[in-house]
Length: 201
Image 1 (spheres, rainbow, N blue to C red):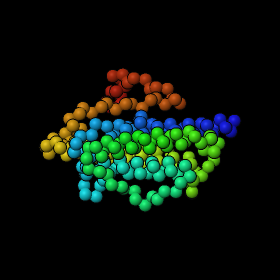
Image 2: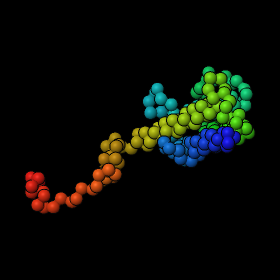
Image 3: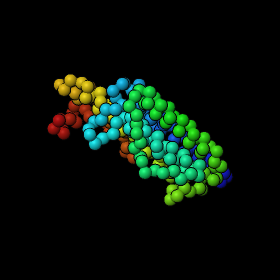
């Protein structure tokens, strides 16, 4: 039974890693979707001087994904440079995105190669293996959201000033969904014209 429980833990962690990278997790679109169909000028654009571009964030995520994979394989890589050089050309960008995909495949293979019981009990430094991998998935999810937001800001910056933000303003407001009736009390009967007069309505 203990082995079955350990296998479920490993499968759940793999599910979170996979959906964060290539599907749709509980927060938003995946990293793969976040970097899909980038235009020529999008990757290097920054919302402000002190923020990171899409290109920089892709390489940042790849850096930490590689670090986690190496730690799981028993190595101790240097981790001081969290924002490596990101390249400048479209070819560099394609390589970075492909590299991120290869790192994900290598990471999940490393997880699958671990015995479920070992996976559930092992520690890497101050973190358990499970904590390290969930942290990596949460980190990737955060930056996928940042990339999606940066791309939205980029598109908005290319619109005429008078049109910025108008999409949300012109969109018809959705009707609020009424809360479900309480399970402990029956639905109130509909008010008749007579009852409204009594209530001053």
